[in-house]
Length: 353
Image: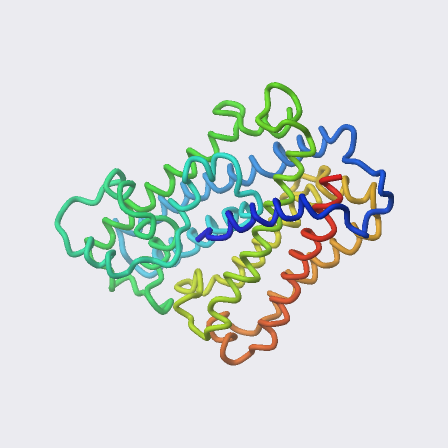
């Protein structure tokens, strides 16, 4: 579910015309003369490795559901469910940079459309046409990807039993996992140097080899990605089910994985800002901001940490909390909105100068 990308573009356009923020320390400040290290670290140390992990874990998921199909018992079901959650993590941590091939190749909606179209899914399950990867690839986006697999693995109320699978569901599950793996493989190859090498566009921003006319424009792209995911978490993923008290609007509700999804979305912001992912520790947007406004840099670090903590502090499942612990949900939402506001009002103007 990515309905906020165009809105994010509008944010970028609007900010570009607003002039400079009061947070800048010097009205004559400009983007760093050379942001090559920042852009290189983000491309090679954060973005491409995240997609590599996503592809590897999609492969693990395919293997796990294949084992489940061959022997549908509780142990193999649990392994497959855990594999789904493991694959979900790098995807959610990639949502801070939904630009480039993930957008232009239509990969995002092909693997993460929401809500699931259960009515049409049941219709496909009721048919007799063989369910293959090609068949699933050709279906509408709400009938494939993470959430179709999630529904098949976890059931409508996170209570799926191995004995509850029909042969047709297991057939669909395998084909859907193959389809997912095909998309993650395509995405990783699009960024890796051995493939289409999109990472080179960030690294060589400002040169004839890049689609980015300047390093500043590449930094704008990254900053806007952060704004868009903060907006989506606060005003979509949290707000829709919360404001309407409707769990049917909650993404990843079948697996009770919503809070982890939200935290990983904010971790995607943290990874880009700090230039850190797993064991990699390089330079991120913080390097750009701290040289201009150290106080703002410190504040951003705190806001990101506070938002991750507040989401984790929501008691129970998100489905439960939107009814029984609404203040904790609202507190987390406010903290995520604060990140969005800071990047819109303070960071983007600094990048655009």
